[in-house]
Length: 170
Image 1 (cartoon, rainbow, N blue to C red):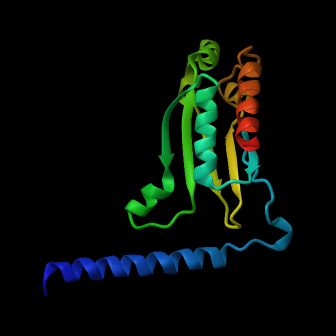
Image 2 (image 1 turned 120 degrees about the vertical axis):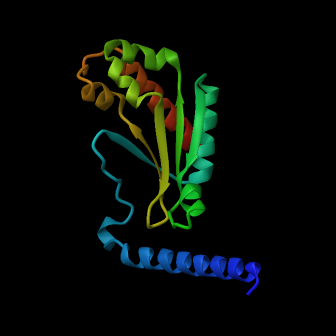
């Protein structure tokens, strides 16, 4: 058979597999009614609900970071990566951003904090269609690196809080 036929067949099988996989995941992952839209709890992570979709929330967040004088180094679309390998994933994006005025003082307290910097914000959709915006609490990062008393923590926490509030108010 000609090669284009195999390519079309492969694409059809991949598409059918993705649709089946997505349907089975959402059917199996339906939480009980009492846990619907519960705030996800991950140690050291601060999480807030967004009324916008994942992509829109990530755009707003990146714009707010830029407006605040920060640099947006990258945006990582995990869903696009999964789809490039014929895998299903709910919308999930990471925004990598920062400002030396905020991160450097934390690294002066503990150079190893550089592994957690620049800061990252994760925007994702849960199985119920709710969009969430989360980031690592600077206090958790400082504690992780043994410098819980670092004076850089409070200003970083305040900057992150303002950034998230401005993003979610749009």
